[in-house]
Length: 518
Image 1 (cartoon, helix red, strand yellow):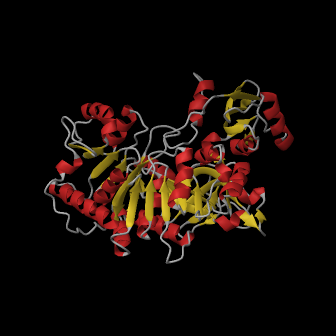
Image 2: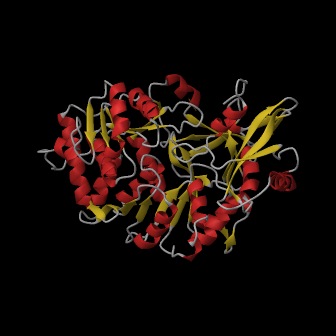
Image 3: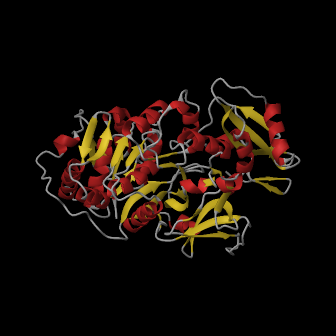
């Protein structure tokens, strides 16, 4: 399946029901279907079909998302360009992934003119929302094109998305996701999130539609639900939308949830419509998770995945966050749940041997959710997918109840005096302090120990704390070995366009001209 197949199913459940909404404007399923047919037919007229690549460069705009349905219907692979990246990074992605067509929003025209000079092989440049000098508008480009139904291209092994990796450890790679992969994601999502057949879900797309928010919108559309689009995850706008639109489900990364919890008046609102508040993309502080459950109700839902196996590798349901009417213990809340029905999970050591309960090793997954490999990078593919098992790069273990726990990224592990130290364990303690908004723990050079533990902390607006206070908190919970040997305060932690803290950038500050794995 791809985006167009999800749309077609939603259309069958009610052509005139609202499909997408942004501000005061709404598009019915019939509207989106007609737009997707016109674009797909135009692409075919231009000789663009299966095996070719197209991209959309825009912030969260419903009309930009509609274009993705047309691209999928014609059988092209969609490359999610990112407006939060700079011109150089977007030029690299579009060239590396062999894009031939770009639809862009006019607010990004300065970047696009720079891209055009860099990308002579990209033949079609279309402005989404208006005519610009040298660029036709999408509407004029589609003038005279029939909107009669066009069957969505179907081939289970055809690549329908080439998703850039997060780039938190270097240049992004292109993860090829087939129609089979997308279908497996949707199946796992629909099996895990249960709705009465009579209820049409309302999804709030506040995070970028180019990434996880776009994935979670698909099952909503396949169920005939409504997707409410926000241009950005501004905390007040998110909270207003939940109340005013009767939102039943949304996805946000933990860093944005932390900002919601710090928003004045967050506890005085009505969140009774929420059934699933999905948190993913990075570990969440247990103390802040507890606070989120108290504020938003028993709707918090964790999923674990990555671009190579999108989102639904494991699942921790809302009711699993509770035990006998009370919050579950920290051990359970810190897990990422059980494997979903579409995925197998194993913990493997460096020699690819299966480890037992509680033993720490690399989390590896297998199933129809897993990518066939990276675009034009066979060596990276061979190193990451071994005997059908995707090596996620995450260190973790499985507990006695079969739940998966993530300790940290392999590349983030600190080796100090021969001991393996997992930063996330320390970050959980720091996150529990009422003044800490976010933090990152890294290894820095040390003459005696090789690496020493350093914490970099971002405080909540108007809050205060001292280095001595936070280090003492860590020592009281973890002992001296794992506690930070030093602690720095920053106004804002460096983050990727998708909201992940860039530990690589932090480490670069301390490891200049020194040999350290990045």
